[in-house]
Image 1 (cartoon, rainbow, N blue to C red):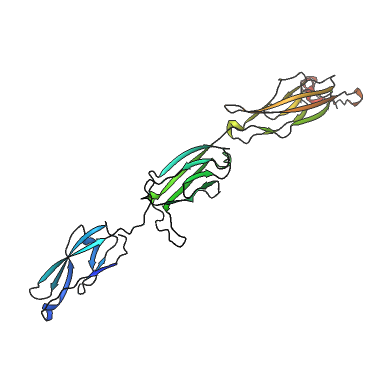
Image 2 (cartoon, rainbow, N blue to C red):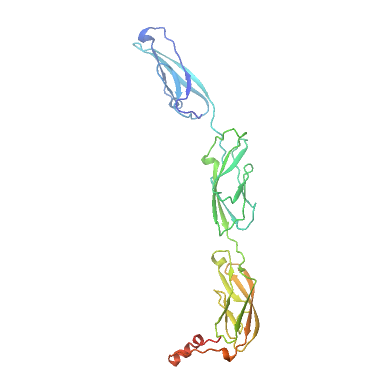
Length: 328
């Protein structure tokens, strides 16, 4: 049924015993809307029938051909030409849908099953499944015979949150030398959209423990040390707030946004203070990480105290005394 324009069909021939114009014959295809539009006589004097393009159907087709002489008056005769038309179109498998959407959680690991493609119309033929586009990163692996799509890497929502992959089904070739004929048709291609779902992951401190050393002469809110945790998630799942596990102590507190530990009051105190710090994300099911901070407070003698006196009004100095008087 697939024929280039001008494909030869057959040549008809008629005989006329007359001489001169009475013996000159021309050939015509009689009109038939179901058949005649697909054929024409290439040369009226030769009777060669050719196609005008691809035929509409397979099976038998009947053309009525007329042979007419050039006499006056012209005489004619007709004949019916029976054509057996076979379907030479390539076999094209068909999916029952053109678009598929699936969701998969991140961190499912390698070789995780995503989807099983199956052409619904195969005519008993073996099918090859191939990825047309969308897997340029190589994050998926498609079995060409079974149509199973699996992960080739551990999917990460923060890296790629959605994939759009085109899968093609074709008749399986019997040898490497055979040409794959069916190509890319609407019915043998399906678009798979994979939405990767974010999974809340635990935050991690940059160190399992921290240590710092300060004199006991430092003022209120003196910065001791800053702890730092990271979270690979996005949104609320990646937003961290810091806290001391047992809350604010008499000696220390922490900035919940920056993780900076500062003094509340260590005047006259000495020794080692062991603090436990927690970082918690703000996801629906909050995940946490903990670390320890060891702060050693040393005694300060009056000989190493430095006082700064500013030439300001006394009420200004008093209001800012915690900032302008510092002991080292």
